[in-house]
Amino acid sequence: GAVVSQHPSRVICKSGTSVKIECRSLDFQATTMFWYRQFPKKSLMLMATSNEGSKATYEQGVEKDKFLINHASLTLSTLTVTSAHPEDSSFYICSARDRVYSYNEQFFGPGTRLTVL
Amino acid sequence: GQNIDQPTEMTATEGAIVQINCTYQTSGFNGLFWYQQHAGEAPTFLSYNVLDGLEEKGRFSSFLSRSKGYSYLLLKELQMKDSASYLCASVDSNYQLIWGAGTKLIIKP
Image (cartoon, rainbow over all chains, first blue to last red; front, top):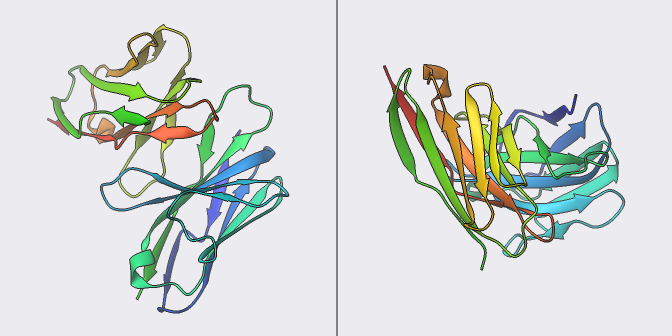
């Protein structure tokens, strides 16, 4: 149980285009989903926390108009990188927290590697 | 401020034992996680400690001392596939994960 999928796993796009990444909890309901980005050989950087049905909470320094997050249901959250630029190239990982669990484990998706040309 | 410290890199020999330390300073404490992350992949859950003491799970064990703000991950009978980064993360009073930078573990034959 507690499987999180992410789609696509890899995407290459041209500078200026927008890219949407989907994160789904397959066998549980996720009241909270998290979006991270990770640069090579660096740790995870939390970008935003999204709760189902409400606006996402962005970390300091993360542009909410550039990284649009939607958490429309208990099993789906999307991250849209708008007008992507080469510096947005990174590994984007989502995680989800199961509403049933009494502690705070986050289940991670497999990640999406974004390359902006 | 909130801070998680763990060594950047460690090297160990196949079949040996290695201990990866983590110290934390967070506003409030609601447990500590260890995750394993292979290059190019997402983190996978290893352990969660919220009470003091040692939790053993097969070849991996995790220890917590809340009074010292200290945890370690102990890996026994090391295998080549254990070469990965090991991430320590503390849960703060807002139930957010505060991540360490990760320890890259290199296993040599």
